[in-house]
Length: 302
Image 1 (cartoon, rainbow, N blue to C red):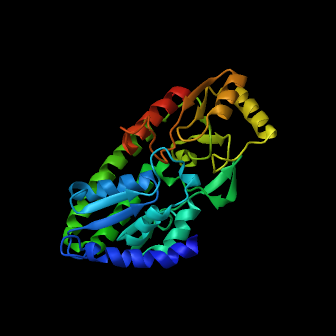
Image 2 (tube, rainbow, N blue to C red):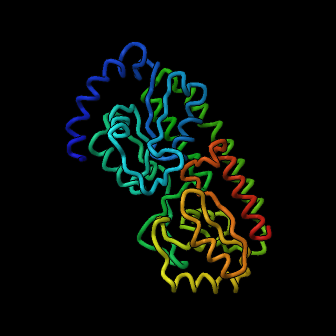
């Protein structure tokens, strides 16, 4: 299927080329820029950097639909065409293999791999660094601010007439994210507990604020925990006085709920903010991160 798309899509792009580079929407003329983003936090960043130009010269498409688990994403023909015609694709290599393949085979514009912008930390399993890196960098607001700066630079290259607008949008975003970082640092200081049991390893970057996360699953929420791992978590919950087992929005909650019941603690939701859902459709990155902070403060006695 990928080889067929690679052959067919250039013709599709050529047919759309008159629109993509007409006087009304030529990126070089500063009137129209199409951006494809791989999943929600990247969409949020591009929208914030675009600022007032969003919908008025900058169009942003998210390849991961609301409610869809981004780890499991497979791109259809329409979504592959979005990658092919985009002036800029913003993605994270290694997080969504289907996006990596489509970018390699079909991207016709500029591409920004955010994994080259931020320093990804090793995935830690039972306190030991592994050879894998943890892709969930957006749990650290300052790293997301760095991505915003890079997006502004790329948009300024694609659309130089509005470079100042993009850099202003990135500056506003950074100010908000630096404020969020201060809220986390202050809110999680002096907690009675620092262990957090989570559904899958999407919260490792919270180590910045002194928390240690213990996942039920690994880097992918679709994996299955071994009985020995569940037994270890049960013992850890009792020993460390953990009050809450956190499930998440886009993955099944059965295992987390069962672990909470078996150990007599609460079951609550901690949103990894990999994507929006029906329940969070009126939220954004900032509001979800603040909700997570409130849940962590309550769970850990901060």
